[in-house]
Image (tube, rainbow, N blue to C red; front, side, top):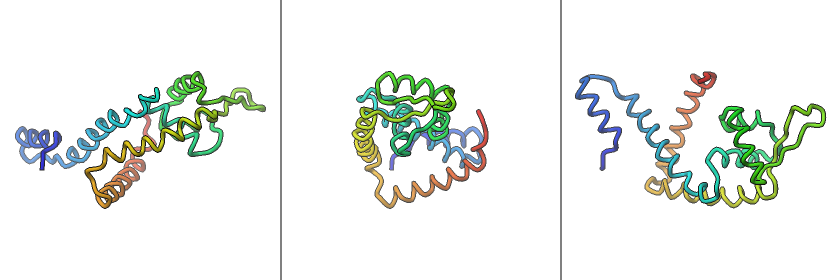
Length: 168
């Protein structure tokens, strides 16, 4: 089996500090490296459609929830700041993918929804994106994927419980 870059880093730390417990680095280092590689790779189909990952996430959120959302609700659903969501919504509105409706009772409140064009784009793009992501994971069998997904879910629940309330 080929050695990954993190294994080399762990070995180097063991040479510098023998006996150092690098087990957390083995997990977190690999998660970080996988996240960086996947971020680069999974954006490829989106770029062909002229979308950034964060814009795709907003369109996907509006589609999967099936209802109007405020910018604040979108921020919570996509784990983004309000300012970042506002910036992305401007781009999506300018492209005609998202529509904004002002609340009748409180004009400070906006309700956002997909336009017909936005719905068509996300409905066309999600299956393509999932097919592409499936090819990225082709080297892992279904059982391995299921175990990995379960393990990552356990880690996510653990981290959200410990770190979920922390603000950067």
